[in-house]
Image 1: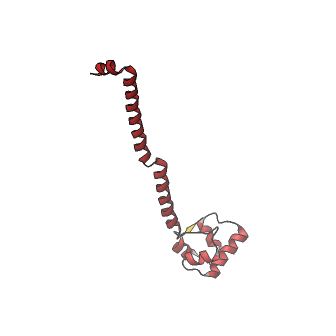
Image 2: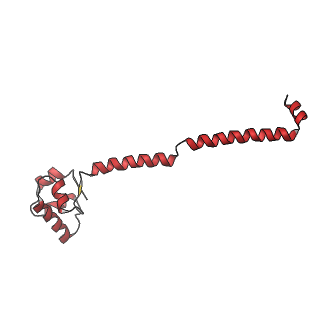
Image 3: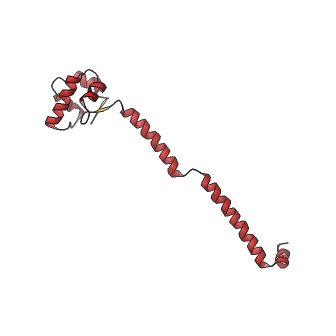
Amino acid sequence: MLWNTVMKHGANTVLLLSLLGAFTSFSLAKKIEAEKPTTALVQKKASNENSQLISSEQSDKVNINSASVDELAQKLSGIGKQKAKAIVEYRQKYGAFNSIENILEVQGIGPAFLEKNKDKIVL
């Protein structure tokens, strides 16, 4: 049957029809491919969701090396503005805390405070 078509219409027509069929298949494949979400888009969405989760987990934590007096007083249990101010003044005078336990060197801060807040404090 194919041979009869070739003989009847010529090789050029058959070649043209074959190319059109291949082009149509290629075109449909491109359309389907274009409709799939890209890996980068999926990864970006997952990354944003992870960032929001991490951000909400860290929102109750306080960095004692950068927090303001108000932030320390609000987020840490058992201290008011005076002790928070003492933490900031200690940090300004002696530099950044090297470990969470170094907060015990601040006057007015004791082991009970550290025990209550150790899960909230980060460096």
